[in-house]
Image (cartoon, rainbow over all chains, first blue to last red):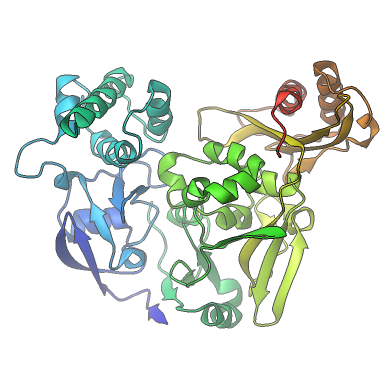
Length: 166
Length: 287
């Protein structure tokens, strides 16, 4: 059985965006803070820190989850995808391009989390309805856009992905 | 908001977990998906000396379907919803799951965790209570089962002893010819229910009511189950739905909080309850 003392920092290994990464964490360190302050991945944003606003959403072992309500030590050995992993060779991915086309970004605070949720969601729903997209977005708070351009971008990205996959 | 310091323990087996809970007693909090506990820790509403992470214990993720249905401690809400056999066996659970939090929290939150947390507005305690399910509790002292109605004691308070682990929810097997509905009002989808209503009805071929289980969440400090025996034998129609809901609305003792008065909750029991019962009457029965 693993037992980690509260007042010590313990090694945590993650596969982040297909790269092995090692950092150190006290048991109470949130995954969101580990990604930002230990690994320097500031693309993941931190909003409410109780799982409501969705800004910190990342993909852990293939599923979009909140990084603010789990601890780095819990995730030791997990595969994590963050927003930094979406633009493969320095070019925006299909979903990111759709966000740009539809002006689905204003201040950008919520964007990284929504992109990660939508990445997981579109992997499971290749042809979603507007209602399904809005239901998925109920787990995110955006105070700028009124959601319309975000919904349009995700529906457009779904179309583009279907076309790309023929 | 960051948690206070805690030791992190990750037992490899169920026996190790039970030994640890025995050793730590009230100093420990059990962590599965963390969708309730994580927020409580971050807000320092709880400050356990140790967190016991049960996620990697083999066997606790299982859904076992036989003469009754058992869902294990680490089965996530998303995995339950994707489990076709389980969803076919528990149609009321299938209707309720999309109301639990959001897609992103269901990916990690567990059925058992929601029951163990016992928020008065939560859907999983409501569905388990409405279906007259049970919880399985294990400790070094042994295994016991409790009816959901006995398990939920008060808001965020259950009959679980500090050294016990909620290892499974036990659901009655699917009953043929049952009809179901689940409706809820919240400030936004995925937010805490102001009132939620779960219904399982049996109606005979002459449209007479044979039985009706109606559970209400968010109204009192724990799920409320309406007494509907007086309506058995009546014709299952929208007017009967209204009469049953009106009767429940008279009997509940609703909570008041900052946003929602007791009177509003009572009015919702009347209208939402009637809607849920009428939906169940009109639903296709199970085979």
